[in-house]
Length: 292
Length: 272
Picture 1 (cartoon, one colour):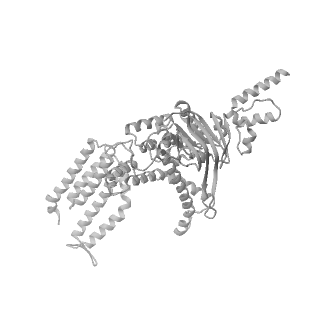
Picture 2 (cartoon, rainbow over the protein chains, first blue to last red):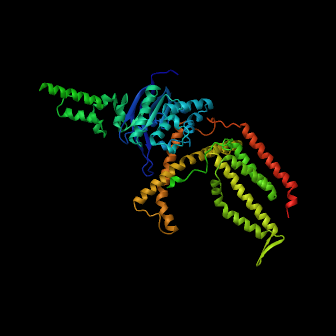
Picture 3 (tube, chains in turn blue, brown):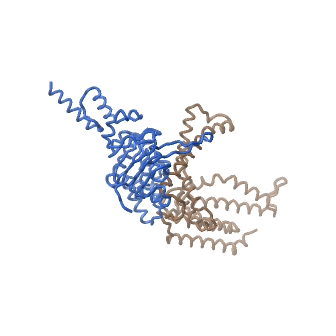
């Protein structure tokens, strides 16, 4: 198989599901002709409010859902080709919102071993993978703990280790921080970033937190089953009005610069970090002072 | 308050009994039960008793825990003792009004009481010294020949593991739901049994709904981790029989032989 730079290629995908209402059996469309390429090593955020189709899109990436129309290629394999379903799931790992509902075993290391055991890997190799995975999420010293003794952020890191143990090329995280406290969110975000930078794992992060999206290389915004924006965080967050129209917020600093610009103050577009904003404001204030 | 409940009755430790292979421990526990029923006299039973007392001493499980495990069986013990005393005919020993207690009755009752107490004591030693996960593992591997008759051994073990995993989670959830319902004015502490049972409905329904939702999500997460049943699965931790396991088996065999010998040579002398 030829290794091209695209790990995932979504081509003109539409998806509808059948209504569960027996009196009104119709297809409810969720995705409309979505096309998106994800390259190896990228750190992509998918933003959208509830019901925008972002989770449905994520479920297409590892064969949980198959497109009604269009095709999804994972590492060059069509997800509709049932023969390679486990190869695809091994290539694209998936982490969900609630860490409690992803952990199968009663001991951390046994849980991390679950996926490699399913793949029929040799015991010694499993041990190696489990230790590596636990180290890469910083949970090695908790390897013999019971999951219910851990905090939310720790449990989510164990869930991530459980996926990493399959040695996937890409991990898709569906709102992994939505149920966590701020400390847990920070832990999980820094773990994901490290996995992307140090282990070269492609990351697709589904989120509705703007500050998390701002930390990614690329932001994709979905609304009503379509992709409406796709670019670097700077590019995407310059579209303050469009984002507000679809019910999303922008990071606080972006909002501040936007309002200042509206009030007639000269500032560049797409400021997304606090430091950058502070620098620009300082420059402005110094300039104003020296004019006086 | 609910979180005080411990899973099973595992008493963590590193004693030689703890470190035995779970498969061997299960088999030896069964052998011990057979030993108890082979014994035909109190003298023969004493051999089994010596064995289990020695095993408990080696396991360093505190006496308090052993007594705790015996508490629930006290009514059964008393009931069996009374039945045996009154219904076994023989030499009248004590006569109370129209009821006769025979000599044989008292002896059989004593035999049964010792048997039941040590039966429970012996099987408790297994659960005290083996973590639930090891126990599940041991059962799965011991039963694996039954796959030939289409018994879903792996699936049963998986269900047990998941049940063990979710007990603390569901207990925590029950606590939360109870607090939520109390905050809405639910009264769970007053009234008769019927009223209290009714008060459980608003707790059980949300708990069930949530358990089903969890099951759904867990199934999805398991599929994402390439779970496809037991076939082609390997295990990280291999169970291996160590010399200690064979020594333990040999010791049990010696004790069984001891019981049989006592049965043959000593029992005829003591039986009334």
